[in-house]
Amino acid sequence: MRLPIFIAFAFFMAACAQQPSPPPHPVRCPGVTSPDQQLRACVLSVGRHPNPPFNESRVEIRDITGVVLANKDFKSPDGEHGRNVQKAEWSPDSQFFVFSTASSGGHSPWHWQTYFYDRKRKAFKEVDDFTGPVIKRNFRLTAPDWIEVQVQGTAADPSDIVNGHPEKRHLSALH
Image (cartoon, rainbow, N blue to C red; front, side, top):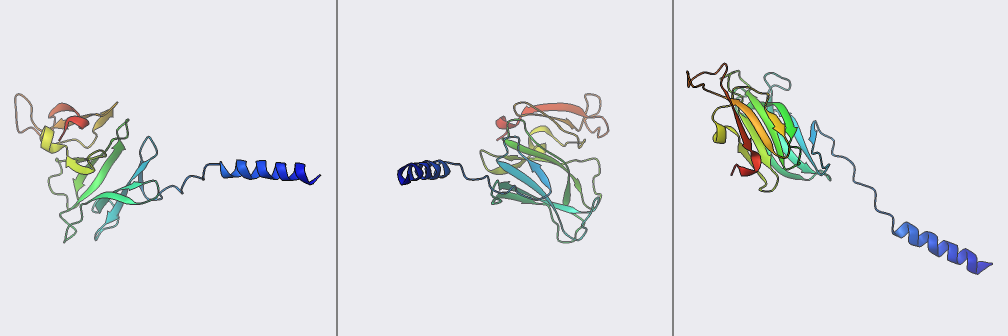
C-alpha cells in the first residue's frame, strides 16, 4: 500500500515543481502599461504644485518588477518653468511611449512639446526635433509605430500656430 502512495506523492511533487511561478505583482503607479504588458510608463506629479494645470511631471519607464529603466524629469527649480504630461500612450507595437506636455507656468500655451521613449535605444527624444513645433496635444498613433502630429505653419503662413499642418513619421526612423 505504501508504494502506490509514494508514487502518487512523487507525481504530485513533480507536477508542483513544473508549475510556472506566479507573475510578479503589477507595477502600481499612475500611468500606462505597454500593450505587451512588459513595461509601465509611470507619470508622476513632482514639484511645488501637485495638481494640474500647474503641476510638473516625471516620466519613469519601469519593467514589470518595478525597476526604473529610464526617466525624464520636467521639474523646474521655481515650479513655474517645467512641463506636465497631458496625453500619454504606447505605440501598438509596444516599442514607443509617446506623451505630449504643456508648460507648468502657462508659457507658450500653443506649444505642446511632444516626446517619446524608444524602448530599443533606451532613450527619450523630442518629436518636435523631427517635425517642427507641435501645436496640438492630441497626437495620433497607428500600427505599428506611426505618429501623426499637427505642427506650426501652413503654406500661406509659416508662423500659423492655430491650424498648422499634419506631419506623419515612423517613430522607429527617428534617430
